[in-house]
Length: 231
Ligand SMILES: NC(=O)c1ccc[n+]([C@@H]2O[C@H](COP(=O)([O-])OP(=O)(O)OC[C@H]3O[C@@H](n4cnc5c(N)ncnc54)[C@H](OP(=O)(O)O)[C@@H]3O)[C@@H](O)[C@H]2O)c1
Image 1: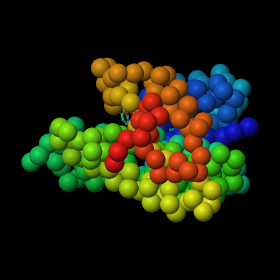
Image 2: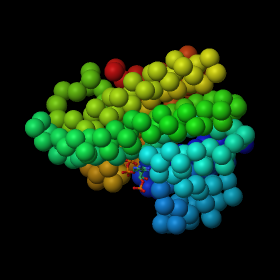
Image 3: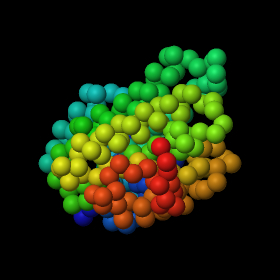
Image 4: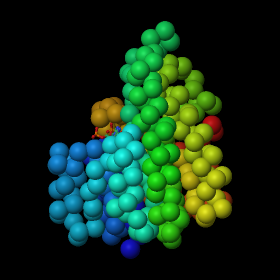
């Protein structure tokens, strides 16, 4: 059975990743900050075939990351899916970006995916597919930035993209393919009600992309239709 680990699985895109992969028969390690309060996720886990395991993970907490790695020691993970993220300060326009809010978002969006990858690299290396996938955003693309603003979100996702390209190079010798995905503009708490697509459409499309990636694709930044987003 193939296995996937998803961070931020309590709601939004993360919860839908759990729903679709588990329905497809994968073993799913669903990580969330507060399992006791993760009602929908627990319902999925209890209603399924026993293939959804819920783990506690605040991604900025190194002790929790280490605990998780210990629990999963020796278990192959085909796809490590770094999904957890925050928009951070919503009014981070020129002259108004808060240093504290910026650092908090950097911690969640940029540093934590790296820390999760470092802790679980052996699990991914031991799997068949060996994929590290991270959700970034087109808002982190320099080439796509035609409107300015959003300093906190844009810069933490751009920095995340740099992390993933380095990881793609560094992990290639271990047969691991690290890629970056943009999920589309999705109707979630973060994307808001005017988003262009549902979580189901987003996750279906991303699963198709991930089903095709191989070692030659390491370091790619995918649009939801499978095309490449320029950095
Ligand atoms: N929605 C879009 O249009 C869109 C577009 C581009 C990129 N993205 C990216 O896609 C990813 C998922 O977004 P979404 O729309 O599903 O967002 P969402 O509905 O706001 O959900 C975010 C998830 O991340 C979790 N999370 C946040 N901080 C965390 C932390 N410190 N530790 C652990 N988990 C944490 C949240 O946990 P709690 O439930 O406990 O708060 C929640 O489960 C994000 O990385 C986002 O930047 C989304």
